Image (cartoon, rainbow, N blue to C red):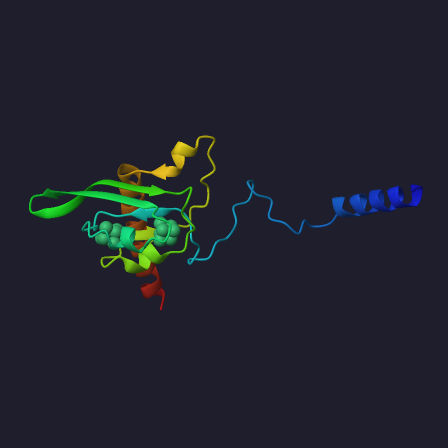
Length: 144
Ligand code: SF4
Ligand code: SF4
């Protein structure tokens, strides 16, 4: 019993001086792959075809469209993150690459209602992500 305690204390003491094996989040942000499947975003290219909603296996996407100057635009675009399994099928179905997965992984909230994303936020994030991805692409092309 005493020996086990001493062994345990020794291991604890030893690890005080070793480099940690884990990432010290939130002090250090993790390095994520470009393929990381984080929070979904939608940009203004969306033509309100509802293909993303149709293919979603969990029925997470709700879209209601309206005609604006002869174009179909979403009046309601909700994504239910509670049931989303981040499979990415919606992004593959989109004909105009409007719905994309960001690498934002911070979506812990205290209120489940906040896990339903609405059009205003989705479009704001989506347009910002599109600009960011375009500039990254241009930088990569320049460096080749
Ligand atoms: S990632 Fe998958 S589960 Fe989530 S909204 Fe898209 S299709 Fe549905
Ligand atoms: S995000 Fe893409 S698939 Fe979904 S409604 Fe808009 S255009 Fe269609």
